Image 1 (cartoon, rainbow, N blue to C red):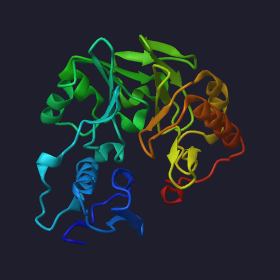
Image 2 (tube, helix red, strand yellow):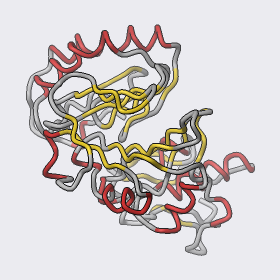
Image 3 (cartoon, one colour):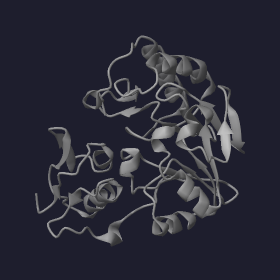
Image 4 (cartoon, rainbow, N blue to C red):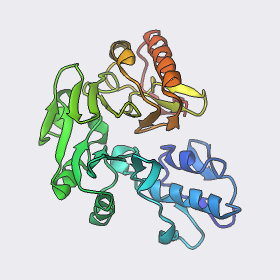
Amino acid sequence: MDGWYVDERCINCDAARQLAPGLIGEAGGKSRILRPPVDEAETRRLHAAVFACPTRSIRPASGQPDRALDPFPMALDSGVLMCGHNSRRTAGAHAYLLLRPSGTVMMIDTPRWSPQLAARFTASGPVTDVLLTHRDHAAHGRRYADHFGARLWIHEGDLDAAPEADRVIRGLEPLRIADGVTAHPLPGHTRGSVLYLADDRYCFSGDSFYWSRTTGDLEVAESVTWYSIEELARSLARTAGRLRFEWVLPGHGGRHRLPADDMSRRLRSLAERTRQLRPRPVDFTALRW
């Protein structure tokens, strides 16, 4: 396909397919190039996939993509940027920068670590907090927090993944992190899963739920639940009525924006559907991206 290929290191995390739909697809449990880009917009989408891929598996025939086309951090909305440069140590999870009215920035979950990337992120403003949604995404949290001089946050249920955290979220009640930003404990995917709600607009859901391109709706990763699908159902039932947002911004799975009333209705429906689920063995191949 015009020299582009996906090498054998692909871990099928879906990040590239989200960023370059129609150009990258899935076959045999791996991503593959469907066709080459035909214009500048498609070339940029393909390079976004290239520089998000945690294994750097998407390559041109030359072997080296054009670094001038690295779009990250990439604006998704006026208040949120996607970090890109996903880390293999977080199974390719997305991380985000939340821009605050004060001019400061919060990082939600962590991209791969490098001082060069850290410098890019601080170009958006001083980073005051690194907010971890759960243990799976904690790999580079302390490194980034120390570099920024920021506070590292995690829930007590996953504290062993970041025992040096500066702030520990406890219990099940919402906790104000800063003006307009609230942590909502949501045990289920892991014991210490948390989502962060910002400005009644952005929901950073970690791996608790995501937007599925397959179903066109909010979904839980029922086949990859490390702690308890039944606990996740209780968490969603407790929390769904408290949340109002337009953007769902997960670690894994699709991002999506809808009017807040529509999202609220879908989240309540998800809570009810999750209540019907029962434990099952972990099966990554069953995910409905």
